[in-house]
Structures are given as C-alpha cells and as structure tokens.
Image (cartoon, rainbow, N blue to C red; front, side):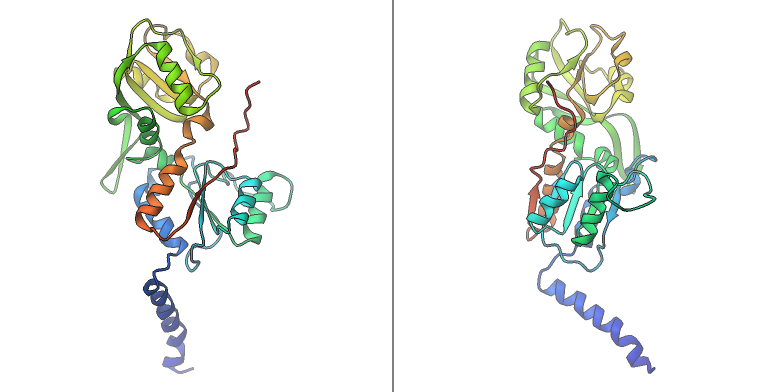
Length: 288
C-alpha cells in the first residue's frame, strides 16, 4: 500500500466533514458539545450518569431533536414519528449497567427501539441542575424571582461556578395562601404538600428541582422564607413550623420546563436544528 492510498480515506473523511460544514449542516456531536459547554459533565454528581446514553454522535447529521424529561418507549415512538434522530432528556435512561437488552422492561425496550431507528439519546441531568442558567434558574424564572443566585454548597469546573440550589426574591411579597395559589397555577399542580402555613409574608424563595430535601437546612441558613422542591420524605417536614414555608410540588412538575432550557441552548447555537418539546407526559404519579 502506498502512502497516498493509506491517507486517502482520512483525507476523504476530512473533505466530507468540511463539506457538511460548508453546507451549513449540524451534526449530533456539535449539538452535544453545545449542551456540554453550557452544562459541563464534571458538574454532575458522582452517582449520576449524564451524557451519551445510546447511539452514535460523530458523523450523524441532526434530522431533529426531541426534548424531554424522561425517556420511555413512548417517547422514542414520538421521536420516530417526528423523524428526530436525537433525543435530549433530563433524566438518564441508563442509571445502571444493562445485563441484557431484550423486551424485559421499558428501559430495555426503549434502548432497542432507539438503536433500531438509529436514534441517539443524550441526557443532561445534575450537570444541568447545577449549571448557571440551568434547571433551577428556569424554575426561578417561571416564578418571577429576581436577583437569583446559588445557595448552599457550590463547585467550580473550568472557571464555571455551579450549585444544586438557587435563591431569589419575589417581585411582591405574598401571603402563604397566595404563594400556594401561584405555585399551583405556574406549575399546573393539583396539590402542594406543605408544612404549617407561614403567618408572615413570603419574599425570599429557595429552589431545588427534583429531590431537594438535602438543601432544606442550607435554604434556612440562607434566609429563605420558603423552600420549593419536587419531593421530600414525611419526617423531613417536622420541626420547621413558622421557620420556613416548605412547598413540595412534585418531581415531574418541578422539572417540566427543562426541555425549554435545552431548546434555548440548541436553537441559540444552531438555528437550523428543528427542536420539538415532547408532548408525552411521563409522570408516573397521578392524583386521585
């Protein structure tokens, strides 16, 4: 084999990639890179599994991106129907290694269907929770909070400061009753789990989407009048009467606007990429 024949495939691949760029096409890898620049993977918690879940990213051009909270078989079906070859989720499809890929459960069926239809799945979980402008900042925006900043423990990655919770102030102080009404309206929840209602107005609000009970003490130390999260255990409500207003709105409900964050990142970097907010409600909890 001559030197020229050896380098021809490499040269051809370089030309092919250059042609894609010249035609203004966007690869899945470029989209993933944009998401990870916004929320670097080192920002995720040690137990997490954010990043690529299924598929190839290097050479595939994005036909469309379906943005969601959870990946289920129904969500993969939705991506197929929309001709999207990329799914970006908040919660990872794969938290634990698979010992087989069959039709034994929904995770395995979703993996099989994604591979069969050449769909890449990427998850941005606690790295997106912890990123500036990420999930908790979007929750704060929906509540109309001002002067939003991190509270509690923070970490720094590549000069980017991140944290699991944010705190900000309401435009106008609200009574506890008014605050609950606002939460139910803003997050479309049927009920809010709360401790004893505060007999003072609420102005300063701490937030941690999803399972955020671990930050309750930090929220109190930061001077929060209210702490809003997605889920807490029974015993964690005790002992805070008239100290802080606890408001638990549901894990799914607290993080439901994460797909808007994904959309803004992707379309801000690549206006040519078609993004779809998933219409599949993956919340496994119903209120009867």
